[in-house]
Image (cartoon, rainbow, N blue to C red; front, side, top):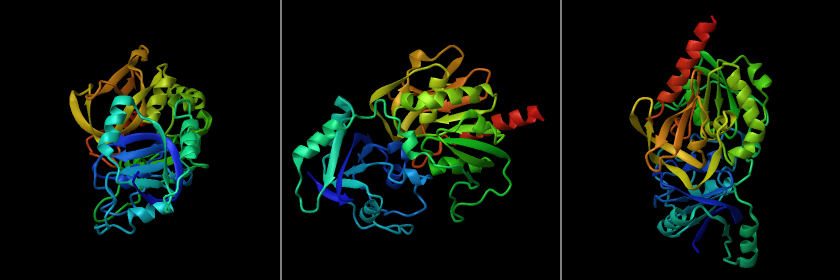
Length: 371
């Protein structure tokens, strides 16, 4: 029991915990959280309000993203110069149900020990609940295993982005003289990934998750990015992995992020597995085995590539220093790499921005060799 916030009704999903201390708006609008209920371990959520600039969904189809949220304490009145709305009102407008006043430390411990449960959260202003119906709803929800959610959050049609990251005091600036054309396969892409590509001089063309290799290559891209997204990579990989395999064979530079990383692994012959509690937060240590450096990164995933299944010629480049799970791969002899985490850092530390520069160098080298 707790205090209801946001939308009224009931929502089912997989409950995960997120350890980030900032960026609750970006987290709740990340399409990768589709079909999930996010429990925040940081107790003070909502104190800087919300605004239109920090929304991470780029496709109208992904307007809801996270299905629900759980907070330790009820949000206070916002105090921030960028705030345009309260968290409660913003959640209502996005049809997201939230609960406050729960013991999130106990919930986090439960998830760590027993895994991420399927659950239903409900908000009724009159306090009247049909508990039997809610129990049945939670029991009937099938969970994320075998669930292809990319089709639910992807764009319905292609669109072009020519903008860089938000910068004080200018805000978001247009990229007027792009150096590269990048096609993004949208499995649930975050807006700041598109802006990070703009920062390396890319004009970005976003295509639906179901686009064919022929449709991608018809744009004559200098590079291809496989985006983040929700759901089981094996389910999305049924139609996406053959396309990705063909794009790799085309010789074009390919970069994968999160779900895109997992599906690149599938396309190259590896397998994925469901993690008991996943990785969700902005404070995860990862080692780049190509440089020996450790970076603190933002993560949001409940599936991972099974390192034991990586085929010959596919090199593991990054590993989690929390549990040793795979966090990056590259295809030897090809301009192809991917990471499990979020290098666009929204929210999170900016240690991994260099990966976009690495992608730019691969594109520049390929363009120069083709000239």
